[in-house]
Amino acid sequence: MTAPQMARASIGGWLAASPVRLAPMAGYTNVPFRQIALRCGSGFTTNEEIDAEALIRGNAWANESARGTHDRGVDLGIVAMQLLGGSEETLVPASLRLVEAGADIVDINMGCPVPKIVKRGKGAALMRDVAGTSRVLAAIRRAIPEVPLSIKIRGGWSDADQNAIEVARMAQDVGVDAITVHPRTRAQRYAGRAPWDVIADVVRAVDIPVTGNGDVASLAEARRMMADTGCASVMIGRGALGRPWVFDPTYEALDEAGRLAYEAEVIARHLDLVEAYFPPHEALVQMKKHLMHYSAGWPGARLLRIELFAQRTAEDVRAVFWSRLRPLRVLALV
Ligand SMILES: Cc1cc2nc3c(=O)[nH]c(=O)nc-3n(C[C@H](O)[C@H](O)[C@H](O)COP(=O)(O)O)c2cc1C
Image 1: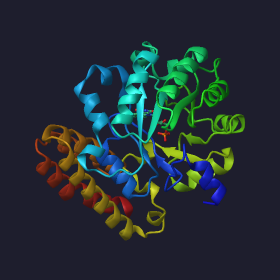
Image 2 (image 1 turned 90 degrees about the vertical axis):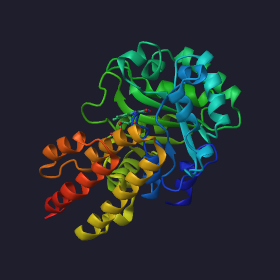
Image 3 (image 1 turned 180 degrees about the vertical axis):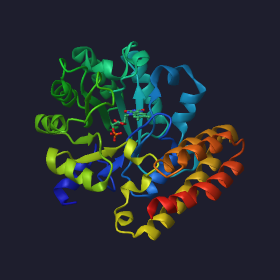
Image 4 (image 1 turned 120 degrees about the vertical axis):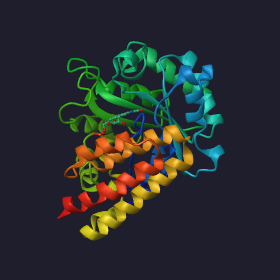
């Protein structure tokens, strides 16, 4: 990266090691997966969304998620923590809690499309009421003046209601430090191609750093998104599931044997981290979930996944994975 690009990729003074980083994904971007993404070269990571109301009510999962890093001795470097909420009454105290828990950046989710979430005025619903959301963001800004504040938005609510530019300008006006744009509308959910031109429109409309997101599955595509849209950095979501090495330029340069060895090391390390971090039941769930992604596209993987899901202990999951799935990966490469 050039110096001006580095400067633009900084968020509220934090400078990411790489302009390409892991996107927040509920159910996936917990501490072990973020450790793995960082190890593979991702820029700073964001936790999975935490419900603001649940957090201030003392919900155990939300609390656990919020404390997830610093007081466990896990070093995740710069930590962005994302909140899901719909009102000043919940988002302001929850932001303060995240700062107490060590968040370096507080991110507000304005893109979640799930019906039960938007019905409660959270996620993408925040894009529908620009004036109301401006008051909420301004209140968060006043409450945590020293901490970088970012938002993650969509292109808009629907085809007829595409207001990313209006929302981005409003956010800049109330003192938000950075914006991530996933340009699909709420109505599109994850279907169809992500219209990158919306990212370019937002980049032109504001002076604060914009992170582009949507349908990037390689560093080459990330570089293309930055070149095409002018965005300062890129988030990769689904393209990193089962492929955290997507962040590593050295992986691209490896031959097939080298890639296999690299992948095996990353997967083994990921499983170790999952087992060390989670209680046994949750560790088992996480291992199966991520191994499903790691084995995607391998010949015969479907039947073997059934076998994987039948296992009851982490040890058995590992045994099945290494004895059956890995040789298939070798086959997939020849
Ligand atoms: C399983 C899943 C969970 C997600 N959870 C979140 C979340 O917690 N917060 C958020 O801002 N976006 C969330 N997203 C959206 C992603 O961050 C990203 O914007 C979207 O997947 C598009 O990027 P991609 O094409 O690189 O996957 C989620 C996406 C998926 C697939």
